Image 1 (tube, one colour):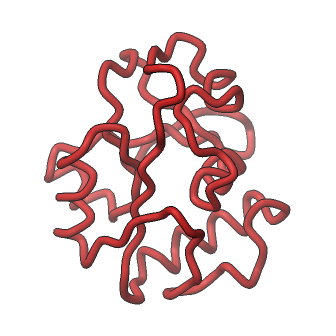
Image 2 (cartoon, helix red, strand yellow):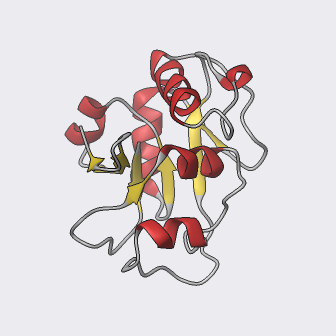
Length: 141
């Protein structure tokens, strides 16, 4: 998962699977939501700043991977019927075609979040989200 949130503290943007699932399901819609601030207490964003959520438009192995992860790590927020290379995304999310389209979407507008394989994301200079593992340790690829 990658983002374009300006002025993120040096520790990076920290999220866990359940918060990510809530973001991609549009249950969390602003960057100053209490669940995000709890994980990132020094994050400074404009009040009520919308989260722009991008997803792949056509089936992809990346979509299959992230939806499988979200279901395995937080099944209450990301049920089995939302797993696969193509899923029905929540209203209010935006489409990106292919890795190039996703990279352009994330880099092209502030306050976006999306997913792309880590090789492309890092090659394109995107900021990776630090994910909490099952022990609560935040890691990136």
